[in-house]
Image 1 (tube, helix red, strand yellow):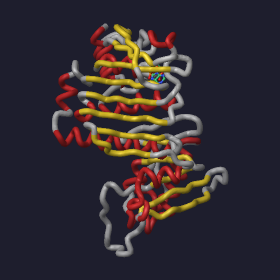
Image 2 (cartoon, rainbow, N blue to C red):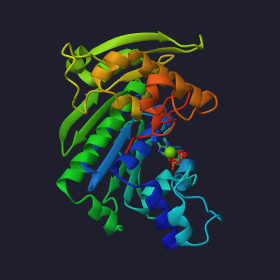
Image 3 (cartoon, helix red, strand yellow):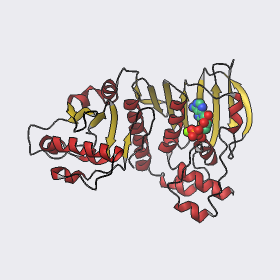
Image 4 (cartoon, rainbow, N blue to C red):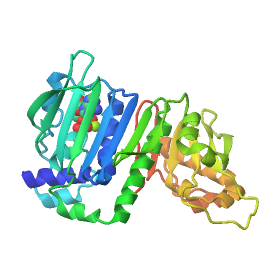
Length: 329
Ligand code: ADP
Ligand code: MG
């Protein structure tokens, strides 16, 4: 049973960025308006996510990180193949299984905050009063301490830096999705990125990307075939020299559907010069993505936009009322 637990956990929690994602989603579920993320040694020594959300009620503490028993798995071999298994309600428990976890929390009804130490089964082993304000802080220490092969994968400086970049990209995505959210990101005590509260998605886009990047973007508005759908956003500016076809990977497109951001890997690969020539194709491609979300999925996009080959996979989209961010890996 211990092996099955470890295997299932290591499929939910695959990387530093997956821990950060789960913790941020919990903070957002708790209505946080400020989230502070701190990593030490790229997150392998410590990942701390602090929010000012609702906190965890004393009654919920004993069960918050206890994973549900599953009867669907008979052997650890079965488990290795189950990559799309629904692990809902198991994030915190899974993190406990592959690291050491502390949870400090205070609700509006509590006089003071309490810090709980959890064991690998998600059970509280000790608790003590703490000084933090309302909200929850989850501290994850020694990630993958019991998964040496996984840890080895991240042993190079390059892999670590890539991981840090992925965390930042994730935060940028949430920053755009949640304009009203304040985010700070610290690595080894150095502030590496932050975002203040702003009033809408476009302001959020500008604030997370910075004026330099925004200066090289062109805003657009597009009415789709379906009048209920309004596409808007920013595309990289076409270079006046049309021979310029390459671009740095940091240049991206930002597309909003009815003021909600959409991020589609294939669209982001389109270069500025091809956007210059095929801007309508990009927008057409987005229309097809929409159809794939709300209607039957077309195999490819017709006409010139064929090259973009849009599917609903690898896309993160924020649908009204729910947060659903998928990081392109
Ligand atoms: P899920 O989010 O699917 O319920 P998790 O394992 O991610 O499962 O979290 C378990 C529970 O712990 C949540 O349902 C919630 O009650 C509580 N919790 C976790 N993180 C927070 C947080 N930052 N603020 C408030 N409650 C939290
Ligand atoms: Mg969760």
